[in-house]
Amino acid sequence: MKGEMTKEQALGRAASLCSGSEYCSAQIREKLSSWGIPDDDADSIIERLTAEHFIDDGRFCRAYAHDKFCYNHWGRVKIAQMLRHMRLDAKEIEEGLAEISDEAYAEALREALRQKDRTLHDADTYQRKGKLVRHLLSRGFEMALVLDAVDDHLGL
Image (cartoon, rainbow, N blue to C red; front, side, top):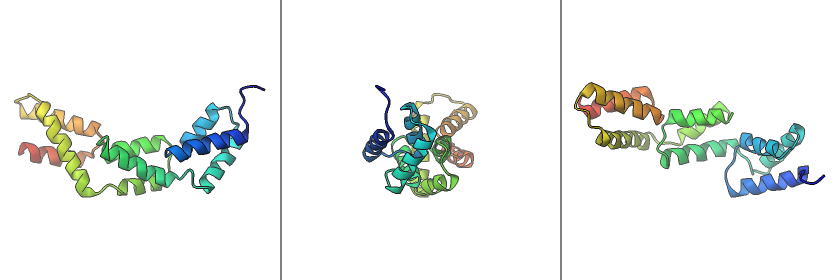
């Protein structure tokens, strides 16, 4: 039948994808499903790609956490939420987040706070604090760290 992909073709195509960019097993499973590969075949393809180190969910978590922190300036909460959404193991997520140094994390929080504060024109400290806190929480930073940083920044 024209247009249907064999298991071997799917394996080659998935291996090619994984060699060009980092993917987790859930993402590859979605690709295989969209190509019409049955679940049993998808399981064996993912097992083989994992055995041959094309797929490594721990490596994916570390790379994802690093990239989203360094380039998108996301906090740990948002990164963890996205990784959980991809159905990755909690231990691997925790290990990926541990790669972010506390010093760099604190500096990223302070920089996001300074950037947002420059855009605000509220004279009322209460409204200013609320906007800063909401913004930093939406970026995925932890509530306790956000409150401490905002209070420190505003001199409260």
